[in-house]
Image (cartoon, rainbow, N blue to C red; front, side, top):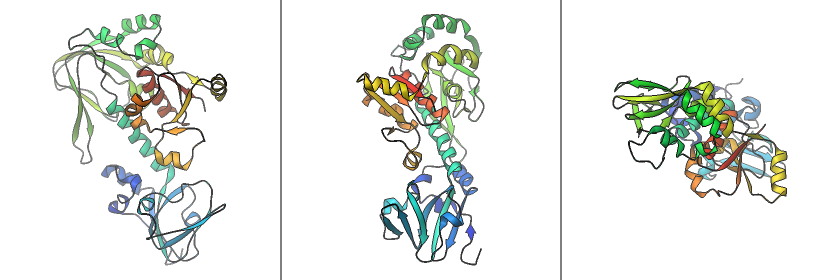
Length: 346
């Protein structure tokens, strides 16, 4: 590579200028730096050839010409500020990109960024979904609290009987950390007595308390449904007692009846019968912009709970994002809210 075209490792303050990285912690930004770089291009050179097509590109300086099937446009410092904060090669119909003068471009490996943002996306879901609004007064029997949830109305009666007989009690003292962020999940928990706090690791490594759990609340299901590590820590605020269900029993008796896979044939049949079908892609906007199918709407997993009040109860919802963990979590969340949701088999 000549003197002009050479790679640099980007500084953190450069990454923070772009929308895709602005919400990431310092630790995450350092992880991104390992799969990112800055390349200086001389006139006529293409970042696609210099850095590779498996990267996202962000404008730093100079000027770049982008050619599509039926359009050619320039990217420079006079371009729309909002667009300059996003990757400029997300479109699938780009034919070529070339520098019209000496230019600098930031590149980031797509898979590394998508994997990291997806993990953060699932973590946001976890924090939002840890408490259960059962509508029961404090002190109500934990089984009554569980039966009052919309999720349990979808569980066959025979499964409910087996579920409750499979729970095992565990007395636990104040200050004990029940689950730790980052560890593998293998239990589902219901608070029978006592209270606990939910926390996540902040940007500076400190514990950030998110919410308090009370008697009748449950937690731990997200790591079992999504086959992921714990995205939050749970610590007891008082002496208490938990009811614990192992992973295998949870998946067999609770998860399996709720999460059902369908195919496009099911969607076509429902549509032909004039049934309302809404296909939701729960990936991040950056993933959706880069690659999505027509007819799907984008509601990121972390936003899905907030959008539930606006969703029509009479519709069938299909989660379709070609991503096992997020598809399962998305469908689980909608079913938990009492909606009819399915997973589109890839």
